[in-house]
Length: 195
Image 1 (cartoon, rainbow, N blue to C red):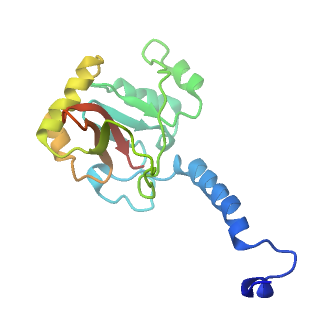
Image 2 (image 1 turned 90 degrees about the horizontal axis):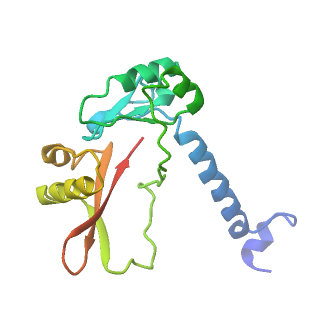
């Protein structure tokens, strides 16, 4: 018996056997709750613990409309109707998409795209590095131009380069690029939203 086994009750498991199950449950609980936690204020200002109602976040190409902050589907539809020309507003965390669509069936499109959740605050990169490219934060105005080049190639709404640059230190939104290791060309991009 080791020294730590002597102090442990006979029927309990060693801590190393308990931890994986406990941390798995903790992560699942966080995933369930995070979509409903109060959003942070735009441009990195702290919003505190009070949920803001009817919250949207400008991403340059349009707004993310956080549906959990709206009282009714009609209110979400109203926010989506405010979309400006040459922009795309996206409703996020829609509890009942069919109800939202029914409130404005000729005006709202249900996009089948996926979003991915990654806790950037605690994320640790894999030991296996990708080959041929690396991922980094946006660091220059040239990166902003490269992101728009990628957006245009996929018929996406471009973002004013000054918007990217003004958000480079924001806590609420982070722009990442994938850079080719050999040519230095930006070959991909992703937007991270802290919410």
